[in-house]
Length: 205
Image 1 (spheres, helix red, strand yellow):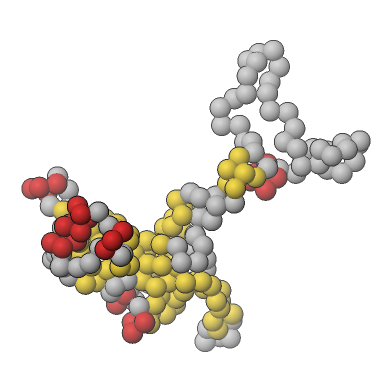
Image 2 (cartoon, helix red, strand yellow):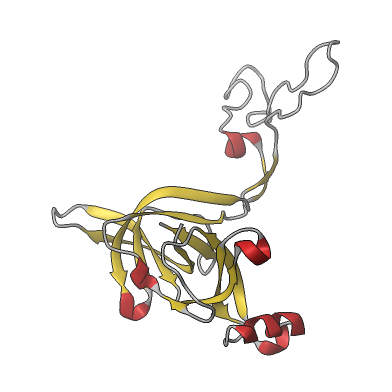
């Protein structure tokens, strides 16, 4: 799948030709440099490695600097591989947002916002114990019973309980491209994408 690495700028809304207000996300997509070309002969599979967002040289290892030097570019903060790229590219080629067209559908992958340690009501949508009556005192948002009786005398694996929420890889599929602003390397995509502002996302078509 062809694709680019991008950075989530934020959300806004635009009006379509029928006057309907559409929520959308603005993504700075590329330009990305081809930093490595994987081949069957050498690597056992075919893929393109793309780099995005310049990194300060003093914060890079010598191995990384040598790797990017082969591609004739500076060190990059984010590097991602794309398999089955639609067009053939060479080492050092620049790929920009023009590979996308208005109206087509893309998949966007990113790391969701971390929400810390959350209870079962927020994390799994539980209704709480006994709602707000029957002498529950301060147990309105408690999970209730989690274990069985004397058999099997343990809590089953996969039981929905309180815990860390967010901070996971999430892919949203079939989002429509509303606008492509080539001169500013911007993509306007219908709906929301995972991650906070300025987080990296992967756009695939």
